[in-house]
Length: 114
Image (cartoon, helix red, strand yellow):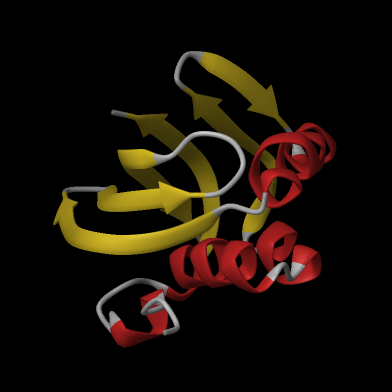
């Protein structure tokens, strides 16, 4: 049975949907296209700044480990978009939180935490 995608979560902004569904569909251009040029991913305290660094992180630790992300909750707190998730794949497996900051419809920052 297919896992539900974030497409069933219509309240998610388009850039967040592109990150999650891009990951699940192994659509690298869709995933990377969601980010501003100087975006940052903070993955449990490790920072990856700029699209080139994010592409490397993606290849090694996201799509490169066949991650599948299931959205379990969403709320907006001011400028922050807090998405709770369950992750499966060949790397980390379990729950987590992705806190997104957006500007002009693009992701400028994702903080990934427990």
